[in-house]
Length: 93
Image 1: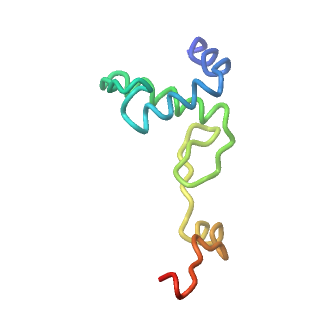
Image 2: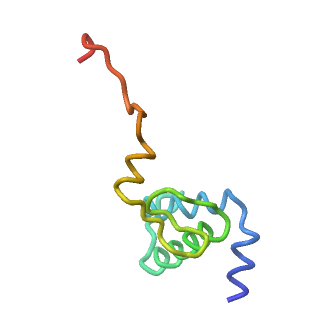
């Protein structure tokens, strides 16, 4: 297990971004699809990186203890209170 920790600790941010993109899109940067084994391994690397290197507190992200951050409905409302997603003038509608 210490080998994987070393890999995560030394992983450049650019590599993490490429792995994250591959997991999200289901394909590598060159367009070739990930095999199921690659998807599983890449997802594990992304989650380990997020747990060890990122201080995430957003809803459905991996926290530093390796668990899933789940915010309550009240916490989500508080987080987004007063923020407009988009503003339109009446003549634009």
